[in-house]
Image: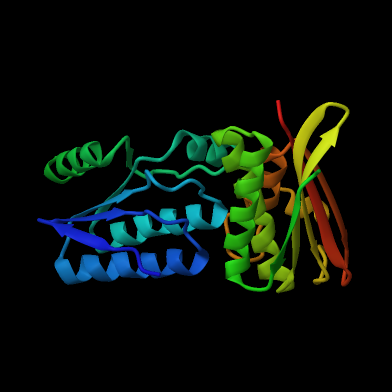
Length: 118
Length: 133
């Protein structure tokens, strides 16, 4: 299973619509980095509105993709994390340190724009 | 009649199957969306541990009804290498697999009751219960 990555000007947009299994999550990590490289993207929005569960493995993959993209020179914003998912992550003691987030796709794009311009 | 499901964990797909079975039962028992996420996440952590450390095992998910209380019980059983130091694996941030080390201590916090029983070279059994409020 592959998660589609859309290009919009200098940004990449990704909406995760499936329950992530480990293999899909790792494939996704690699695909995002390759796409950043191919397209020369400056920013990435990963929308998690449809994701109903993030466990410690998926949290690590998401945190890593943010760090890896930063290394390459692209900023990543995670958007749309559901209340139940936020509560569960904090209950678990998982803190996604220094991971930029926004309420929804629109605000995520605004955040990228202001960070890249600022 | 009380419902219970068994999921064999022999591959990564077992993790997804256990998660889905858990969410379905949690919904049927009447848990709200936050507790459904807690239960599903706990199952995912336990199933992944089986896959990572023991290669195979079972996740049993059952409905509980006890003196007017209802809940859900997850039991994870494997015949893997066992846990050398149970106290250490319950510490936040302790990992031998390069993960976040949030798995087992996380499961304990997500659920209401948590029992871990492990014998070196003889497998691990973990039970966790969430009660419906």
